[in-house]
Image (cartoon, rainbow, N blue to C red; front, side, top):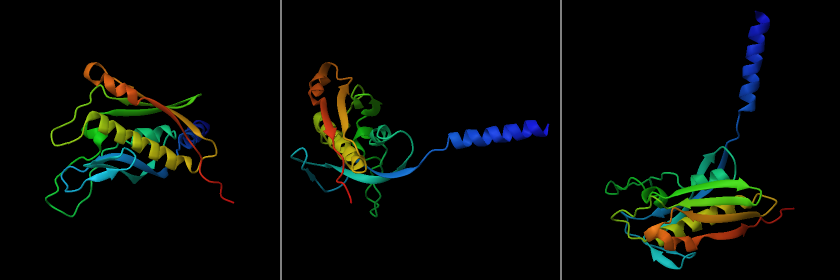
Length: 187
C-alpha cells in the first residue's frame, strides 16, 4: 500500500513539474480608442490624427511566444482614471469593434490572422474599419519588434485579413509580409 501511495505522489509531483510554466512580464501594444476624452493622437505610423492611439502596457504572460503576444493584443482594457465623468468601460479597439486576432507559428515563421467577419464599428467611435485595422497592425508590429529585441534570429511574419466578405472585401489589401529583426548585440 505504501508503494502505491508513494508511486501516486511521485507521479503527481512529476506531472506538476512537467506542467509548470514560466510567467514572463512583457510589453504588449494595443490599439486604443480615446472616445470619452478630449484628445486626439497623431499616429506617426499611419500619418493621421485620430481619436485613437497605440500604447503599450505590461502583461504577465505564459504560453507559447510570440503567439501569445499576438493573442494578447486583443485584451480587454479599461483605462484607469481619476475623473468620475470618464465612464468608458472598454478602450481596446479590437474588443470594441469585435475583431479577432490570432498568432500561429509554422516552419515559415509567424502567421497572424485578423478576423473581420464580425467587425462592427459602434456609434461614438469616429473611425473607419481600415483605420482600426491599421492601428491593429501598428500594435502588432510594435509588440513583435519589442519582443525581438531579446531574440537572436529575425522573425518572418505573414499577416492576413480573414472574413473580409462582401462590403469588407477591400480590407484584404492590408494583408502583408514583413520581417522583424533582432535587437542590437550587447557586449
